[in-house]
Length: 330
Ligand code: SAM
Image (cartoon, rainbow, N blue to C red; front, side, top):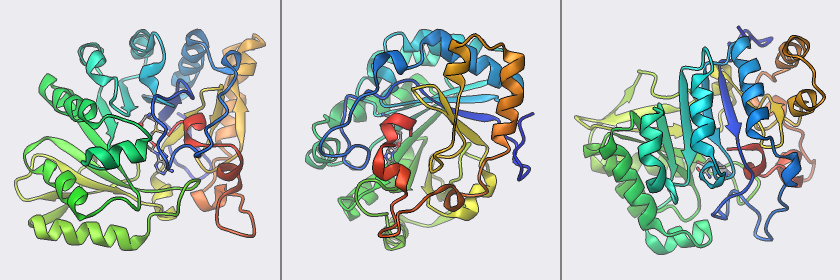
């Protein structure tokens, strides 16, 4: 078992397989574009499997594949199949923008994936183009319907709360949960780009939900992460909130493996353990494991303790300088 110094059991790995993406979402990447990581610094599949196998022997049970956009990486299905075969890994899921998803659904269903999280921040075609800097929403809407129809166990829609999210979007997205078995999660925006989603916006979502119908809090555990869930009466799906509340960090059970091969303890923390280097230098698992166990002990108690702030504004330094979500993996 992998336990940190606050007695949290770490059994969940967010695995970023690439920093490349076929969209350029405004809240995820800077307008001037990003400097891509040198390909030779990106972990090979062999290295990813080695790292995952070491981590599974230490207590990781669930893996979520992310990026960048994971479906742009060649051979991604084979990698997922092989990850699923690792002893003790009993849950593989993926987060995608959905643009290429239709072409992969059969394979993902057969693996089988535990769930697919699809990013969709509006239902308006033009606004979607604006937020994603060019994406075509119909591909994503089709992929959501097809994921449900093919029988993917858990389909979640990730909605980042941007300044463009309006009442019409909230109504449409929330109402999807009435007759579709989807979990729509509103995510408070984290820096770098734009301002933090304010609590006013979360209040606004609740007031729109009230107009749709009666809802109640759900106590069942719907996901692995720190989300709060609500359900309309007789609805097939649910509505979740992923908010920047440091109190939720006490439930954190995850670490991250970046596309360039380092383990991260928190999205907001700059500390890294370079497992790729150890693997490339031919260290054996028995040498690496105690180092990881020690490193995990340094997992910060909460996201505020992770951050190093610039005095002038409230943007964590790591986000401001280089660590856009596409690099670390969202
Ligand atoms: N390309 C895939 C996608 O779009 O889902 C996976 C990578 S993306 C970085 C993973 C998740 O991070 C998405 O749901 C995205 O909305 C979220 N994300 C990216 N930047 C964010 C930010 N600044 N604040 C909150 N969530 C963000």
